[in-house]
Length: 548
Image (cartoon, rainbow, N blue to C red; front, side, top):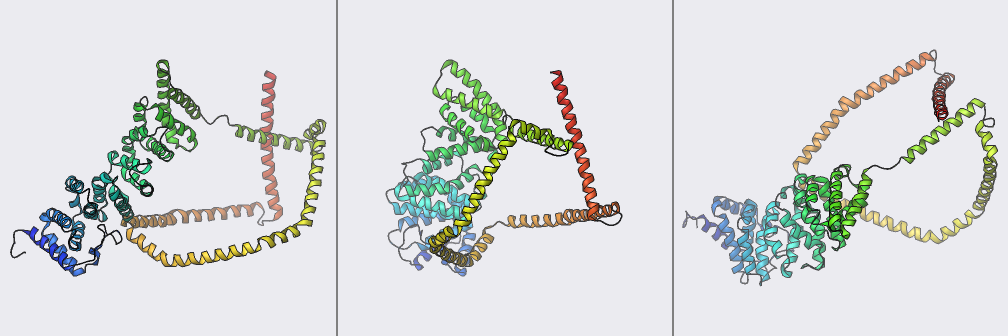
C-alpha cells in the first residue's frame, strides 16, 4: 500500500486493519467482550506487532479520524460474516495514541446508533468501539458515556452494558480529578432521576448498581471548585425536593441542598430568589435544617441568619395576602430556627458547678475555723434540720442491704457459675473454634492478596502523592531536629535547675521532711488565698443584702 499509494496514508492503515482481521480469526463472542479484560484483544498482541501498528499510526496522524470511522462502519457491515478482532485491535491501538478522536463526531455517532436501535448487536458494537477511549482517558470516556450511552439508558437491550461500562470506567480511574469539567447540571440530574426515581426505565438491579456509582458521579459533577459551582445545582435540587418524593431521593436531595448551602455561599442568595416559588420544598429544607441544627457547620449556622430573617419578612407579606399551610409551616420553622440562632440557652451547668464549688469552699472554711466537722455550723444546722438522723438511718439500711447482697453472692456465685459454664461451655468452645478458623482464613487471604493490593496502590497512586509524603517526612525530620530536640533539651535544663533549687532550699539534701515542709507551705498559701477570696465574697454579699 505504501508503494502503490505513497500519498494516501489512509489506505495504508485500512489495508493493515483488513489484513489483521483476515489473519486473526477468533470464535464468535458477544459484541461487548464483557467477559474479557478491558484491553482485549489488543493485550494479546506481541511487542513487535504493537510496534508496527503504532509506527504506522504515527505516520498517518491526519488520517486517523477517517480510519476510526472506517473501522466502525466495517465492523457493522461485516458483523454477521466474520470475526472482527483485527478492527478491534486497530481501534484499541488508535485510542491509546489519540483518545480524543472518538469525541470529534459524537452527534453523528449518536445518529448512527439510533438508526440501528432495532438491532441491539450493532448498537452494542458502536458503544464498545466508542467506549474504548475511556479506558485511557477518563474525560473522553465520560464524554462518550454522556453523549452516547446516557441517551439510550432507557433501552432495555442497551442499559445493562451502559451501566457496566460506567462502573468499569470509574473503577479503572481511581483518580477522578482528570474527569472534572465534563459533567454539568444538564447531564447530572438525569442520572439522579435514573438512580432514585422508582419505576423508571431501569430494572431494580441496574438502578441499585447506578446508586452505588452515584457518589462518584456527584464528585465528578461538582468538579474541582465546588465553592463556586454548587449554586448552579441548587435550583434543580430544590425543585425535586417535594414532600411526596421517595424517601431515599428526599434524603439525598436534602443532603445535597445542605452541602450546597455550606460550600457555596451564593446558594443562599439563589434560595432567597426561589423561595416564593418553592414554598413546599423550602418548608422541607427548613425542617431538615432545624432537625440537624446541632450537626450543621458553624459557618452555615452563621450565614443562615440573614436568609432566615429575609424569609420571615416574606412570610409576613404573604400571610397578609394569601395565607396557606405552606406559608404557616415556613413561618413557624423560621421562628424556631431564629430561636436556635440566639444562643444555647441559660448556662445551668456552669451555674451548678459554681454553686457546688462555692458551697464546698464555705463548708471547708467553716470546718477549719471551728476545728472539726462536729463543732462546725454546718453540722449543727444539719442536726437541727434532721438531715443527720435521716442520713444515718439511710446509711444503716444501705449497709444492711449491702451485707445481705454480699453474703448472697458468696453463697450462690459458685453454683450459678458452674451452671452457666455447663450451659455455655460447648457454645463457647464452638465459637472459639470458628474464630480460630476464620482468623486463619483471614491471615491466609491477607498473605495472598496484600502484596497484590500494595502493588495496585503503587501502580495507581499518582507520583504527586509520593512527593507529598516525602515532603511530610522532611517536615517531620525538620520539626524533630529544630523543635522537639531543643525543647527536650530546654526541659531537661529547667528540670536540673529546679532540682538544684530544691536541693539548695533543703540545705543540700532532699528529704521527705523537706518535701512535707514545701507542701505544707504551698497548702497554707493556697488556703490563705481561698480564705481571703471567701471573706471578700461574704463581705460583698452582706453589703448587697444590707442595701436591699
